[in-house]
Length: 336
Ligand code: TLP
Image (cartoon, rainbow, N blue to C red; front, top):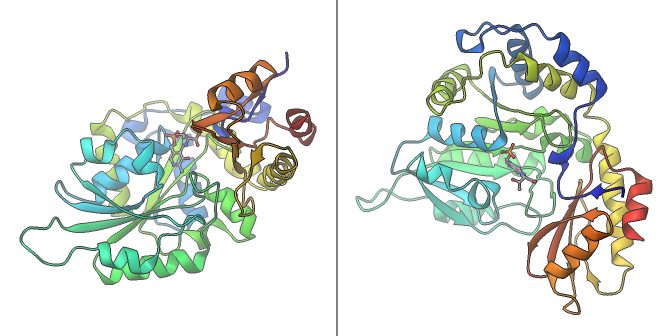
């Protein structure tokens, strides 16, 4: 049976061109800084984000953790949105390994965090308080249904944070989905952030990897932390090669994923018993609920038995993510 896998864009396989590039990749020992393909990928990423330097890491989770380890000290407090991936899905790494407190401020449904909320969460000088040192934003916003932060919002939030002496990290796992949706270069969306993480292994279809970008000093520090947590990857050019192909060939096509997500959302909204959120689908993530006629787990099981895989968010709530391995015809089939 054909499977239409809408659980995540992380399920995408590398393209033929990526596989060829991996086979042919020139490699060296990256811990010595001698892997030419890793170096080329890091330079390309830094150029695309208009940052001084970049670091190739194993995953988005690792990049976000390194951003915390490199920009805070134990006992600090960092501000994250109440729906942040860093809070929900990164195993508490920032606290467990970075020793920081995660202070949450509510995310709005569109992924933003209210600026006044950020300002009031920043700790004043008081012997009892931890020091607030980092603000973390997310673009696109996973749990807010792939919502997009505009350059203006990001710049305003960053300005506010900087005024209070905080640094700003942007979890841009799907930053290119945001860039394509807004029709702006990704560098515009990360301009005011001190550090930005983005993923190669989601909609861009590379098999593994993420990049963490920022100043050269920041990246040097993150490189050291990466070594400590076991992320020195030796002949990583084999996987970096696919990343280069991803950045050179896979960004524009994200527009297709957005169209398919809209097609899916439109179709779902016409099915009795399915409840759609009121906001428009911004990128490649579609959130929906089903009414109580069928228990959520049963719906999940029945959809899967018919070849449609979905993410279950708990209760009656589901997530579907479009990607390169799902066509418009697949969306129609999933709907039917
Ligand atoms: N998100 C995954 C799961 O972890 C939920 C998914 O299927 O969406 N930041 C954001 C905004 C993400 O969505 C993800 C992955 C990450 C970071 C972590 O990336 P990886 O999976 O490479 O560690």
